Length: 447
Image (cartoon, rainbow, N blue to C red; front, side, top):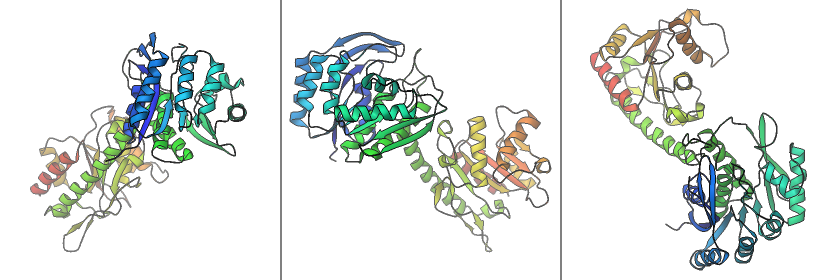
C-alpha cells in the first residue's frame, strides 16, 4: 500500500500533547505517512515547559534535506520554529511546498515559542499556503485586536493582503460568546463553522491537531474547505474527550474520532450477529409484542452523544403468521425508535449499557429473567404526563429516579402493564450483545 507523505517541522513535546510527535499521530490516523524535522526538544509536561533545547540551524537543514531527498512530500505542517536562523532554513528549503502553518507564538503556560515575530511574518507567512492562528495569535500577527467575528474578518483580510497567504483561517476559541466560530478566507469568500464552546480543562494540543488534520487532508489531495470542516469536526471530538491525565492542562485526544468510527463498524457486525440469532431461535416468536420489536445497540457508552451513536434495524422485528421471525435489516444509525431513545436515555443518565430490546409482556418471561438473576422494575404508564413525541423514554428514566430513587445500578428489566391504547411491554438492556443473546436464548428455552 502506497501512502502519501506529510512532513511536520516542529518541536518535540515530552508530554506528548502537542508538537511533532502529535502531528505524526494525527497523520497516521488519517492514513498519511508522517515524517519530521525537529526544531527543538522541550522538557515539558501538563504543567508547562521547564526548558527548551533548540536544534542548530545546520542540523535542521540537514533533517529537511534528508527527508526531501527520499520522500515525495505532499504537504508540510509547520509548528514551533524558534528563531530567525531556523526561519531562514525553513524558507529556503521548503518554499514552493503546500505549507500549513500553525503560528505557535506562545505555549499554553505562556512560554514564548517564536522569537522575532516580524522576521517570522516575512520568512514563514510569505511561503505558507494556509495559516491557522487562533484569535490571540491572529491579533499579534495582524496588529488588530480580535474580540468579534467582524474583528477576525478584518484581521484575516490584512494577513491575506500583506503576506499573500492563499488561505487564512482564524480559530475562534478565544473570542467572546456562547458559541465559537472558525473562519476561513480564500481571497474571495468567508466560510464560517460555528460550534458550541466546550467547558473543558484538558485542551493542550488543539492548535497542533487542527493544523495537522488540514495538512494530512491536503496531503491526500482534498480541497481546503473540506479539510477545514473535517479538522473542526475531529478537533471538537478531541476536546470533548480530552485525556484526564497529569496534574495540569492535559492533552486532547484526536484518536477518539477514529475510535468512534471503528466502534460503529463493530456495532453493525454485532447487529448482524444478534439478527441472525433472532431469526434462527426457534421460540423467539413468543417474545414479539403486538407492536413488534427492535434492538438498539450503541458504541461504548463513554462516547455516546446522541442517536447518531446508536444503531437499530431500519424495519421492525416482526412475527409472521407461520411463527417465523423476520428482522428488518439493515442496521442503521440515528433511527429515532423507542428502543434507541430509551437506550440513549439510559446511557446519558447512567453511562451503562449498550444493547436494548423491547419484548412482549408476560409473567412467565419476567420469571425467566428473575431466575437468571436479573433485577426487574415496574413503571406505571398511567402516571405518564402528556408530552410530545419522543419524550416517553426519557420520562421512564425520570420516573425510575423519582419513584424508586435509583441513581445507580439500574435494573436490567423494566416493564409496564400498559394502559388504554398502550400495549404492556418489557424492555431489557445489557452491557453487550453476547449477554443479550445468551440471556434471550435461556429465556426462550424456558417458555
